[in-house]
Structure formats: C-alpha cells, structure tokens
Image 1 (cartoon, helix red, strand yellow):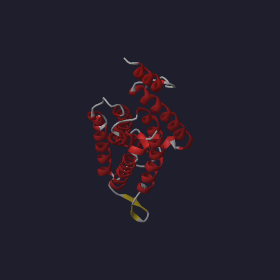
Image 2 (tube, rainbow, N blue to C red; image 1 turned 30 degrees about the vertical axis):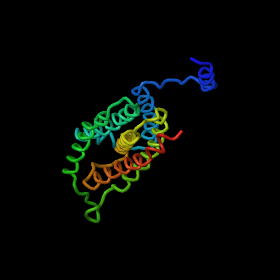
Image 3 (spheres, helix red, strand yellow; image 1 turned 90 degrees about the horizontal axis):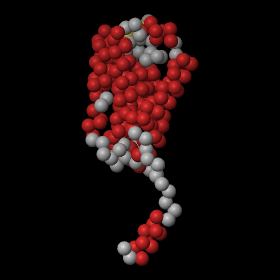
Image 4 (cartoon, helix red, strand yellow; image 1 turned 45 degrees about the horizontal axis):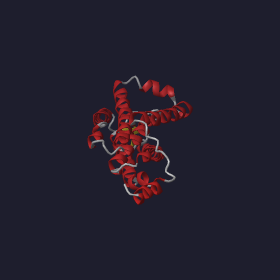
Length: 215
C-alpha cells in the first residue's frame, strides 16, 4: 500500500464515529408497541365507557373480531420492522394476512346479523363516518411515530415497509375504536372502517420515500 493510499484512507476516516447497531426488529417492534399500548390504555380508561364494552365483549363474535384486529396491527408492525432491513424477503408482508382474514370474516358475520341500523326516523347510516374519522385521526399520528422509528434502518425499499406500517397503525386504531363503539358494525360501518384503513395505508405508502429515506 502506497503512502498516498494510506493518506487518503486516513483522511476519509478522519472524524468518523462508530455506528451503533440497531436492536433486533422484534425488540424494536415490541418497544414501539409497548408505548402505544400504554397510550391506548390511557385513552380507554380515561374516556371510554368500559361497562358498555364489558357487556359487548361477552359476544364470542366480537371477541374474534377484536382478536383479528389486534393481531393484524401487531403483526403488520412487526412485518414493517422486518422489511425495513435489506436482507428480509418480501414474504414478511404476508405475516398479518391470516389475522386480517379473521378480522374481515368476524366483522362480515356481524354485518350480516346487523346489516341495517333502525332509528326513530327509520333506516340510519349509523356511526360509520365518525368511525372513519377516528381511524384516520388516530392512524396518521401513529404512522408518523412509526416512521420515525423505522427510518433508522434506512430501508432500501420503503414502499412495502410503509404499507405494512399503515396497515399496522390503522388496525390498532380500529381496535381502540371498539372500546367506544356502542353496537356491532353494519355493512356501512365495515365499508367505512376498511376505507379508513385503506386511506391510512395509501397515505403511508405515498409518504414512504420522503418519510423513511430522508436524513
């Protein structure tokens, strides 16, 4: 090695700081989900009608729906952290698929039983629009917080990472919504719930490159 080469290497290495390796994806996902769980518990215990929720949770269908919704959120967040690493296969995006099917199936059965909401003025639209706003309003800030955690990995393919992140946070928002939902979902409610989830996923996907690759 010539003196010029050694001098160039020394010049390039001057002032460099050691890079601290990232914790395993499952650990970073667990920490992030733990913080969200604490915040969610504060919202639920501080503002929801728990007595109403306790009455509703005795329905096995609702228990399945809640299980599917929560698992979809957790598994999608884990998939996002895994996909943020360059050596992870795209098949990680299939991780939340079974729980998402469970969520849709249990919600769809509820819609079949309660496909219309009858009020004092006849057929009503229910609380679907409020549910849409809830999921988007909670999902977007959660997506921003998740992006801040994911961007440390500087993912090479931010699109799938952002899509999983959007699905995860929207599902977690939908799970929290059930603590404030006074009745089983109708077809209109389910459609608006899915539209809200899709909206958060699309917004996250659109913000993938600037949100996950900016330094």
